[in-house]
View 1 (tube, rainbow, N blue to C red):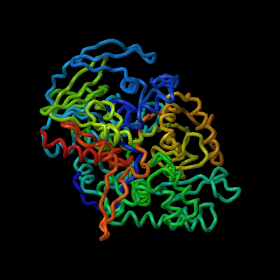
View 2 (cartoon, one colour):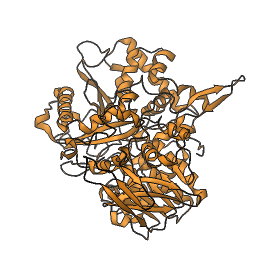
View 3 (cartoon, rainbow, N blue to C red):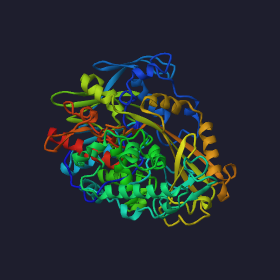
View 4 (cartoon, one colour):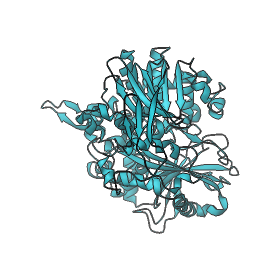
Length: 620
C-alpha cells in the first residue's frame, strides 16, 4: 500500500466494517482451521442453524440464514467443482443436492469484486477514480449492499438503526479525505455531540466504591473526575487518558491501516494492552478492567487478549471528534455507491440518499461501468496468466464470471475457503492465523427516550450475559433532546472468549434461542435504567437480532506486526506478521478486508480497498 501521510494523528473507532460472512462468499475456514470444528461436532459437518434462524425477530437485516446457509456449503465440504458443473452433496440442513451446470456470465468485466461492503466499494472507487470507465462487477451475497455497513429502518423501528457499524473518527489521512470529499461524505455534519460515553457502575463493576449504583455522564470527558473509584484509581485513569491522547498526536503512532505507522512502535504489537497498562505504565488493574468494557465490543476481546498496538490505535482516537451517520457507516457506503452508480439511489441531497431505497435493478444495469449484483454468493475463485474468474450462486443456479482481475473484499475466511485450491501451504497456514469472532447486535425500540435522553451517545455497563453497551440510534440529530420521542437502542455483544473458543462461540450464535438474548436484554435494561423510570415489559416496542458469524478480526498480540528487529545501531526493522503473507496476491486475484489490514476499523476497510486497487490496476 502507498504510505500516505497522516493529516492528524491516529484514527477511528467504528464497529467493524469489513464484510461479514454474508458479504460476498464463503465461510469459516480462515478464521479457525477446519479441523477445530471436527472436534466440536459428531462429524466433520458443522451443526445446522437452529430454530432461531426462523424466528421473525432474527429474519430481517444483517447476516440472514438464507445467506450463510449457502456459504456453509463450502464450510461443510459439500461442493465438488468440475470444469463446467458443481456437485452438491446431501445434508440435513437443506434440500440441495446433485450435479448442476455452471452457466456462463457473459458480461464484459475488467475487475470482479467479491463483497459490496466498505472494502469492496472503496476498491471500486479507487479503481474508477484512477481509471475511469473500468468495467467492474461487484458480487454480494446479501439482500442489499453494506456488509458490516448495513442498517435496519423497517417498522416498527422509528429511525435508521445500524445492524453492525456504529461510527467513525474524523479523517486523518489523505486517502480518507479523498474518498470522503469526492463522494460527498459530509462527516462534519454528523459529529457526535458530547456527552459521548457514559458508564453505569454498580456491584457488577470490579473495584467500584461500595454501594455505588448510578450512571456517570461523559465518562471519557468531564465525568472522569467523578467515577466511583478510589482516589488512586481515578488518578491512574486520568493518567491513562493523558497517555492515550498523547499517542493520538505522536507522529507515526499506531494507526488504521497499521501499515502506515512507524516501525519504531511495532514493539506494541506482541504485548497485550493489559500488559501495557499495568506493567509498562504501572497503572492499577482497575484501569485495565475499565478499558476492557470498551475492548470487548470494539476489539472483540478483553485488554488481556487484545494487542496493545491496536488498542492504542483505537482508544487514542476516542478522546477526539467522531462522527455517526444515521445507521452507522451505512450512510457513508450509500454515498460511495451513489458516486459509482448515479442511479443506485434516487436524489442528490444528503437527506435523500439516506432515506431513499436502493434501486437494485439499476445497480445491475449492463450499461453501467460499475455493476452491483446482490444475492450472488461467490463460492470459488480461479486465476490464469490472462484472466481471473469466480463461480457464484444466485437464484438457484451457478454462474461463472470472468475478468482481468478479481478482488476478494470480504473477510479473509471467504477468500481462504473459496481460493483454497490456489493457496500454497505457507499461505494457507497464514490465513489460518486470522481469528474472526462472532458478534451479536440487537436493535431495541423504546416508547420514550426519556430514560436515555441525557446519557450520551454510547452507554457501557458491566455484568451482562451477552451485551457490553448500547448506542442511541438518533443521538446525532435535531430531535435528540426530545424526551418524548420513540427511539432505538442498538446493543452490541461483548466477547470475552479466548481465540481457541471462537468456533464454539459461533455455534452458540447459531443455536442460542432468541428468547435467551431477549431475556438478557430485559435483565440488563431493567437493571441499568430502572432508576430512570424504565420498565422493559411496558416500554419496549420491539427487539430485533442480527447475527454476524465472522464479523470482526480479533486483534490478538502479534497480529498487526511480529516483534521488530533492532540492529546494533538501534535501527528498527519491521517484521511482517502472518496477515502480510495471507494477503499476498495470487496471479490475478487480490485479497483485501479490514482483517488483513490488522484492525476492525472502517479506515482499515477503506485502506484495503486502496491497497487492492493498486494491485489490480497494472493488470488492466
